[in-house]
Image (cartoon, protein in one colour):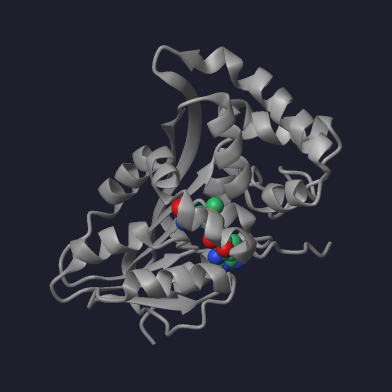
Length: 279
Ligand SMILES: C[S@@+](CC[C@H](N)C(=O)[O-])C[C@H]1O[C@@H](n2cnc3c(N)ncnc32)[C@H](O)[C@@H]1O
């Protein structure tokens, strides 16, 4: 089956505008990734699907002096944001890279990071094989993906509202390349092992998405949510309003004295590249 991949360039301006919200929603994941990688000055890091580059700037600070970070993304619009982020950071570079065909030398990096992107790659095993190839022996991998829709009402409430009102977003979110396509921890573990990694571990990380109101929740998430954002962009005003109302009803149980506080859950895959046989 051929899966059409979505070009996230379409939502790069929204990611630029809402970068603080995006970083805050994934902050627990970021901490867990950093703990797992235990980066040191002098190390070389590849970040795939790096989006705005905010995380890459943080990574670059951790490997200085002597180390460098290559922040990459498949979407040219995101690469433009990465180039801007890299401007003025000596040890940070930006490149257009497809995770399924990395196009860099074997054993070039000490660590590979992919935060909230591997699930969008229709061939995740191929992407992880590529990650393994570009890692030095024993190099570390940290990949974070979203757990299932039932654990992520901050995302699924809007996707479900869109579906109810006939806003069609493409393939099923659990199908290849879909938002929840890697939500099964056993499968995630198995694809990393198939790709040649050792010491593979998958653990869940609780996240929190905070919004002032249901309107802010809808406006922000619907703008950031790639394929859904584009689908809503071509829906009628009446249809969008219906989606907004249903999403607000679904989010309402999460209203607190401090605004809307929606739980989420990510899966963190960590592993090491196996030593290559001596040639
Ligand atoms: C949800 S955004 C996450 C961005 C960033 N990693 C973060 O955590 O804020 C997913 C990103 O993955 C990128 N992406 C999707 N498929 C990709 C692929 N095959 N190779 C590299 N990046 C990809 C998209 O272009 C997009 O920037």
